[in-house]
Each structure stands twice: as C-alpha cells, then as structure tokens.
Image 1 (cartoon, rainbow, N blue to C red):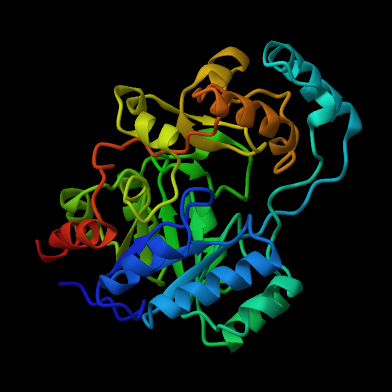
Image 2: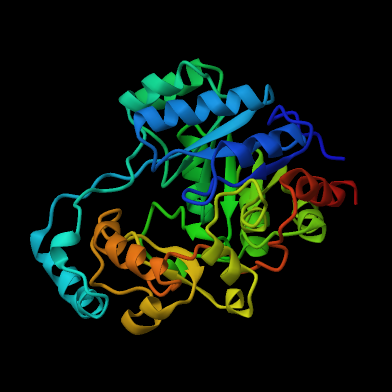
Length: 347
C-alpha cells in the first residue's frame, strides 16, 4: 500500500469538501475510518465555522482538512444585476414571487485574517484551498500552525504555480469533478481536461505529492489513479448519499436516478463554473449564461426560486452538484464506503 504519511492518515483517501451537502458528521466518520475528512468552510459564518470545528474535534482525534475559497470578491455591477433579474423575472412570476424577495449578499467569503483568527485555535492538520492560494502573509500564518497546505489545480500551469507559491501538495481536479472548478489562472474552459489525462501530466511537472480528484467513485478508480502516480485520491460525489451527509432528499433522489448521468458545467447558481446535474433552469437559460453575475453574486437571486420550488417538491432551480460518475452514490455509511475505496490501494 502507498505510504500515506504526507497526510498523516492511515489511508491516502480524502473526502472532498462539499458545501451545502455535508458538515462535521461526514468528516468525522471518514476520519475515524482512516481517511481525511474535510469541512467545507466557504459558506460558514465565523460562529458557524467555530461550531463546526468544535463539533468535529469532539467526534474525532484524527487529522482533518478545512477547505476555503481564495476568490477576489467582485465590485458591484448594478447593470449586470439588472440583466440577471430580468432573465429570472418570468420564473419569479410563475412561482408567485417578487424580485423584492431577493436578499443581497455574496453567500461565500474568501479566506481572510478574520477567518484565520477562528481556525488558529484548532490548528488543523490540513488546510485546502480552491481558486488559488491566500496571500503570502496569510499562507505563512497557516503554515506556522504546522498545517499541510493543499490546493486545487485544473491545468499543469496551475499546478506549477501552486507549487511555486507554497502548496505542499496539489489536487489534480479533472473535468469530471462535481461542484466548482478550481480554475484560477484563466477563464478559458477549453483548458480543462479529464482526470486521467491531467493527473500524469501534473505528476511529471511538479515534485510535490499529487492528489487525484474527479470521476473516482470506487476501488477500481482509486487503483487507476494510484497507478498513474497519484499519492492520494479525493472522492466527493460517492459520499453524498451517505447517511452522515446533509444532502437533501430531493437531491439524493436525483443523484440515484438516471438523470445523474447528464451533468454540465454551469454558472447559473453562483456565477462561476461548477458541475451539476442538468435541470430546467440550466436547459432554458443555457448552463453557461453570460447573464449570471460574477461569482459569488448569482446566488442571491436564485435562492427564492430554489426555496419555493423545493417546497413544492421540484429541483428545477436547485444546484444539483454532482460529478460525472454518481454510480456509487448509495445510502451506505461513510466508514463502509471509505473501507471499500481503500481496497483499490492494495492493487
């Protein structure tokens, strides 16, 4: 079995941080099964983050990962916001809603000194970042706690940049991965490639450990990634139907249906490309609509539509995040899934 010592865990398996569908319960279960459980923190308030980490550390004494975004908040753009509101107006009318129901706010915050003040008390063994890395002073602060720093790369150029700017390991995020693309050096989606094409190129280009992510859902996928040079594997979608996750009943039903075979990158729900299962909004507006405001401002106007539709049993306006391989998304305990994935490590 490959040496997982760089993560400090018994197994070189990482449960991907998935905001909105999991919290400390899933992370703790994976940690206690020998993997690296993760807490998605970008959508948490400071008090919420403190509460999640406090609960996690009461459930496990094993290493864990806390994940943050590193985006630059956009400047206000009233003209673009108005275009977005007008694009959504027919749906508001259909559902008996008013544009006055929109609550402004970003919904997602980048890693900052204020966030670091909360995290420092816990000194997590691992910290991971999406959309690049924090500023040099902030990164130095994280490393002063002894935390291992992981960051997502979607291209070879991004992997080299991350290594040059202080990442201790690189997550090779293939195009199959669910949720937000970690792309940060370019907005050009034609640069994005699949996991099994990206992984060996990044392994060749950097000297730090490389973690494979995207489309891996079972022991065979784990074995394939390790054979291509991965030092660890990150799995997300397969954990979304575990009882420890907080995935909604509506989302779980779609994940376990034939609809999950059709996913696409979309900017509609947050303003940044993220992979989810196709639904009505994506089909009718186009998944990569230029009308969507810059990340993360698209979320505010979607929220009332999502809440009203979900209350009626519909996922027409919900971000149904999923990777391209939801075939193993089943109602099995996270520990059992982790052990099943680990069988691929011994091949």
